[in-house]
Image (tube, rainbow, N blue to C red; front, side, top):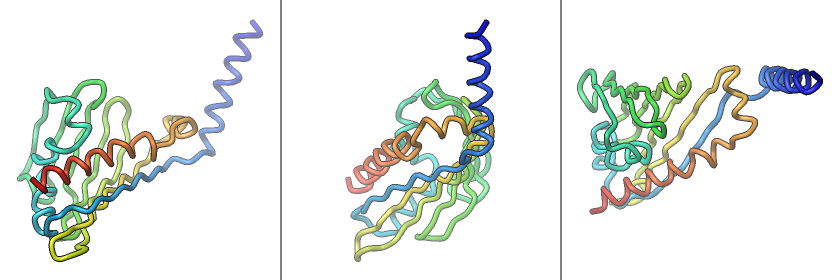
Length: 174
């Protein structure tokens, strides 16, 4: 009986700690691509192209998707349902600044509900080079934020963000 009470006490303590722990996380990576900003922008704003470089999409080539709207235009929605690595959710194109910024809201449904802002920022660094910065600003609501006590999201997601940017560079520099 003591073991049961101890276990219940530890679980309760975790939920209490989660009330006071952070709920937000930020992951940011960048890469320089040897292409003009307009070329990079035109490629990134089309969600159909994300399947060619995004590490998460590449993990599930059989992903089921549905779309609403016109790809590359504000309001376009790509809903996806994939394997256990990908989960389910949707991406929404929420803003465009030609050749400078692409705002995307990522709405996770499975394995848990969460929303992240995942903009791409583009900056010319030469006559034929563009620095691409991909940021993920996410929030995990209570009680899912307990995971942030144990998982370093920068390391956990950062490697896939970096791999995606490296894939993007390879694709655009072909």
